[in-house]
View (tube, rainbow, N blue to C red):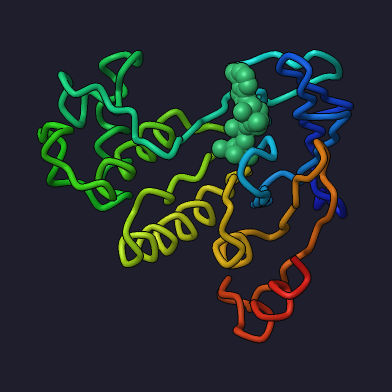
Amino acid sequence: MSRRSVADMLQLATGVSRFFGAQRVLDGLDLTVEEGEVVALLGRSGSGKSTLLRLLAGLDKPDAGQVTVPDGVGVVFQEARLFPWLDVLDNVTIGLPRTARAAALDALAEVGLADKSRAWPLTLSGGEAQRVALARALVREPRLMLFDEPFGALDALTRIAMHQLVVRIWARHATTVVLVTHDVDEAVLLADRVLVLDGGRIAHQVTVTRAADGSVPATELLDRRAEL
Ligand code: ADP
Ligand code: MG
C-alpha cells in the first residue's frame, strides 16, 4: 500500500532569531507544518508575526537559525499591492510567460473575477483587489501560501465572503497555508491549528476539530476560543 500513515512535515523554521537593534523580536523560534495543513499564527500587535512571515517569504534573513521553505511560495499581504498601470490580467501574469494567460483566466474565474480581467486596479473594491492578489499567487501553484492579515482591511461582510472563498480554494488545491491574523475567531474558523506567537516563540497551540464538511461547529469555536 502506498498510502502514507503520516503526512509530510515541513520544518519551516529552526531556532530562528531576528533582532532589530537591541530588540529581540524572534527568539529561537521553531515552526513545523504538515503538508496541506492550514496554520493560523495569532499574536498581539508587535509580537513579530509579520517579521516571521517576511522571513518565510524570503524577504528578510534571520540573525540566527534556519528558514527552510519549499520551492514555490505565494504571499498575500494586507494590501493587494497591485500595479495600477497594469490591468487585472497583467497583474496576475506579471513575470510569467504569455502561455500563463489561460491559467491566469482560470485563477480569476476561481476567485469569482472572470469578468474583471481587463479592469484597472483602481476601479476595484478592496475585496476584489484582494481576490486578484489571491489569483496572482494561485496561478503560480505555490506549495506554500503565506497570508499576512489579508482580510484586515476589509469590511465585515466582505471578510466573511473572503473566508468562504479561501476555505474552498485551500481545500481544492490542498495548499499548505500559514495565515497571520490578530483575530481569534478568524484563526479558529479557518485553521486546522492555531499557534500563538509570544516572547519571540510559539508560546501556545490549539488544534481545531472540524465537521466533515470543513465547517467549525459553534461549540468547537467557543471551546477553542476560550483556550486562546
Ligand atoms: P506584528 O506583525 O506581530 O504586529 P511585526 O513583526 O511587524 O509585528 O513587528 C515586531 C516588532 O519588530 C515591532 O516592535 C516592530 O516595530 C519591529 N520591527 C519590525 N520590522 C522592523 C524593521 N524593519 N526595523 C526595525 N524594527 C522593526
Ligand atoms: Mg503585522
